[in-house]
Length: 127
Image (cartoon, rainbow, N blue to C red; front, side, top):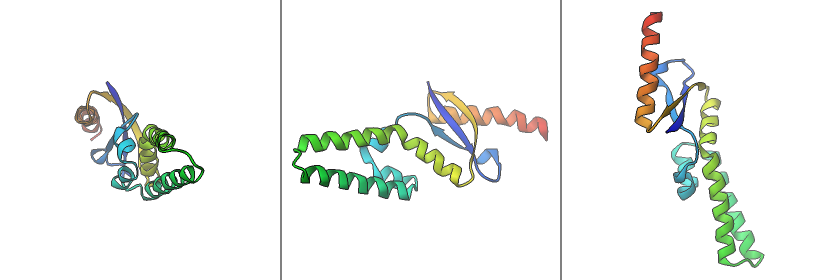
């Protein structure tokens, strides 16, 4: 089971909520800046590309071998994998989204189903 956080857009429409998985992101590790750009995290993607380029260039200039450079780049990629989804959530909060709930489910689809089935009765009771 995995946890998913639910983010509601600025208008407060629960039917437009975004359900984001929590935890480690392998796609961010493998594709780095591309993952950031795919999720429209432009500054983070550019910053990561520059960081990886500067790190690689600096280590090669200092005389480190390809194995040491790969280990350092892999370490940065692992750190990105642990924090990528938090950056995505922070970007949504900058756009006005607010945290609504945490859903535990086995898949993204099940998490969305649980969230929307949970709010439907509540909306019906209020209206």
